[in-house]
Length: 329
Image (tube, rainbow, N blue to C red; front, side, top):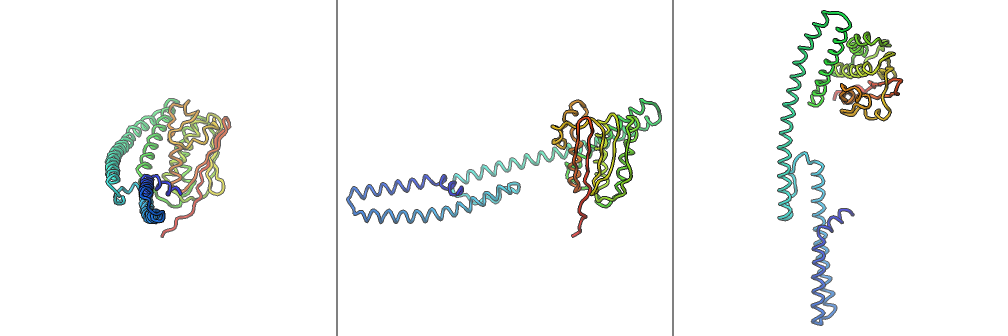
């Protein structure tokens, strides 16, 4: 019905013109006092041929409409398959569409080149900055005292931000450097815990962790990145108490903290890119990228992540690691 309305809007001028011509013919026949049968016969013949013409034209209109709708769904493939124009005006419209498509493609190519240059620059920068970071860490390890430990913790945060930048660039580049196989989950968790051991000590936070003794089908590097991000957030917003790492069925890694929690209105948006929430506005260093990257990485790995939190009580992050094994075709 909608298609017929669209056709009528396009061709109603012609239909009204045919109706006007029929009225003129009827008037002329009446003025010459011709028999009514002749007028009716002429009108019937005109009506018959008019209906045939409109039926054929409506069929062509339907085919063209479906072709254009299909091209709208495949617009990324280009406009080379546009149907032949039905007239001069439609040819002008198609020429305009092709010109706009060419401009869009040129602009898209330019943006891709700029993005590739920017990605290459920041990748090189992230790798280069690791050298002075490593040198500073060696210098700090040679000394002792509370000030050195505080500087080491801050340096560790810088390292984490650099790793976050590299992770973001790798995800946006679309590269697939995943190595999916069975890994010992305890080995991955221990790596993350050792990385933040000094912060647990300096903040006097308790760590409750018992070996989970299970294997997961995942990528070690990317899963370690996610666990480190979750632990970093837990340490950042936990002032007293501790952090517990447990395993729930089926293969769900739970990281609970006794921190300040997340406001209820912020909880649905914590995985949005750039969203920092109420506490993030207090902490000017918050980027709103960590949890966003965590969800993107886990989605690509076939895992899940959920967060429960209560202000003043703490936050629980659950990472679902259960997935179907890969089948080689």
